[in-house]
Length: 448
Image (cartoon, rainbow, N blue to C red; front, top):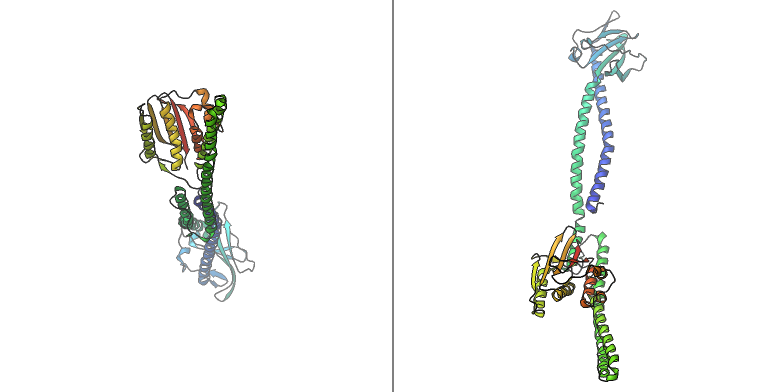
């Protein structure tokens, strides 16, 4: 399927131009053929007039000069043949050029005056014939048919040459037309290309909306997109404010419940109930934090971000090195200096922070982070040399809709947020074995 609008329009225009020229070509060929035949008819009429002017009638018989004014009639291999027949159709004179020709032609002396026709001989050769009926020669009454013939092969050669030039001319005209169409469409679609560039800038965060400098036909579309962008920003702002308000509003009730549980725990007979209450409060707090993170770190609808990965990884590793200083974790990078990940800065920090924290916590002493470009996109990989994840647990961990904190309590709620972030960016998380000996979490982003 052709996805380029310019290529589609160009192909449609090329097909229409080709069909138009294919329809026009036979008409032009017919016009050329008709014009050439009219030219031959006029020339043969002039040649017949030459014969008439040279003919004389003496004592009732036709007299022709030895040399005619038109030397073509006298050349043995000439292309012009002349014949004169009486009323009975008997040949009474022929030009020298007809010596080697045996023309089977019978004139029709029927009072029509003149006739232009094509005749075909038994050997397949064709001739143009111009036949004129004459009743007066030199002022004397006479009855003759004066005929001039010309082989059709010369006409066919001329027509073939014209057709060849016509094909070449049409081919050159088609190429020139296609070039002009390409230039015209490039110019005409420039506004769409400009709008595409502006959308790329909107997606990258370089601008907030589309400009008004577009053709009238696109203004409704650009206005709708600008309204959509504005509405999305406002909705996201309201959503985040509501989430913040919700978090603050729940902190006080949870703190009160926590205080009540601590008071109850001081009574020996109520310690078991206090423990259950504190566990439920802690679970509520974790679930609130999880849902807040899950909702706030969603990919924005129209904006596509690109974040350079290496500085983010180095910053996170510096922090984790301090947290796990006793382990002396050795970290290796395989990340291009300008390698980018199509995510928001906050989402990338949350996702990568959780993956790296798990790697640091579970490794024996070595962690590896890599970023490589694949034919279908890019792949971010975090590996460690820890115990890894059993094969029987991987399907449950990566199954869509499963909460990783419930399947693997040691992982906490971090991987659940990671999974949601990855899915919100149309990416895919896979879990496998690392050459280091532990787990390898691979995040694969599709090409935009």
